[in-house]
Image (cartoon, rainbow, N blue to C red; front, side):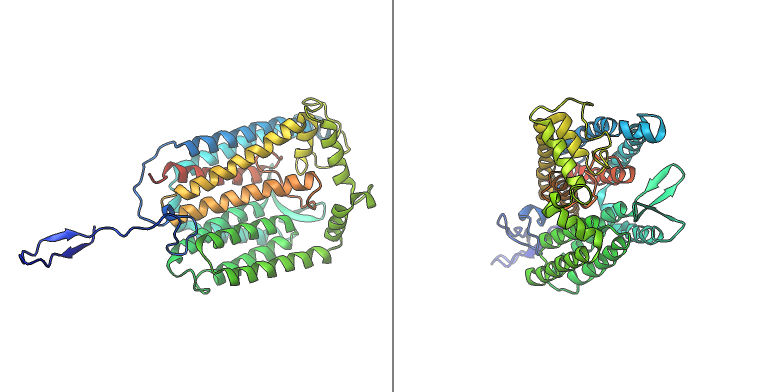
Length: 411
């Protein structure tokens, strides 16, 4: 109802007048939200429509997926033929996962994102249960010294991928509910940090430092956006960065990766091998590339060419033009994600869009940074492009949530 005030004029008629709504200057903070006036003022729903942001995001993501399918076929054909007798093995698996992921995106697009708030706790509980189960011998599967997968028949599930989405949804739910008293550390910062620490601890036991850092960065961005006080937030961020650095240096293989990143030629046949081969592949591509399917890095020279280092294959076969095109598409995804966050009809939608955008864009540039030698190798996949079923499925569901937010943008 619109608030009313009594008319105290001389006539004493007692007629009621509508109170003028309070005006908020653009860019001001209400409830601690640092996203401008549109994220916190009353809004009028625009209905289920396909806005420009909706169309651009959908086109970019589908294009990335189609490019990813082609490049997975190219990058994996040699190793698939050697291991399974069929060059199409990894491509077929990725194609099946793409169809499942497309269904997940469609379902998430049609489901009102506000309903996720009611299931955020359950989603987080399921993610934590799977993170625990993957550590149990006989349930979790160990590959190359990392226990990150649960294999069920032909399916291989990576619980840390679900944990990304679960932490984003749960954090958005909690912070939006406590937006009015977000400067109270007990209301926002403390509970988020406790669950972030628990999630990080379980993922580090796998071990998986790259995913831990991506989740932590995403959660800190969401807390900053809602208006959590900067000093305690900066202290927590500094403590987290320090802990990550210590953990990286304590584990021999992580320390070797960092040292190899600083100088890969110091150990070119062991710890620096992947970085060198990745750079050689990208350099061989030149401006226009050697041609689709004609790359040499995938012929046993570059390990994990179809997963962690698919960007190197893109750079070699499609050249600088193809590599820059991929980067531009992720930049567009980031810009559109920010636009969707700014047009969301409520704080929960804003935080969801911010969290998903930060997660996908940061993960993309962490992967690309490792491929071109400007960041240490962390083993995180390139969203929508690297081979990996559970990663693709969760990423597409996350994009579907953003598309639903875009359909309900305020006008």
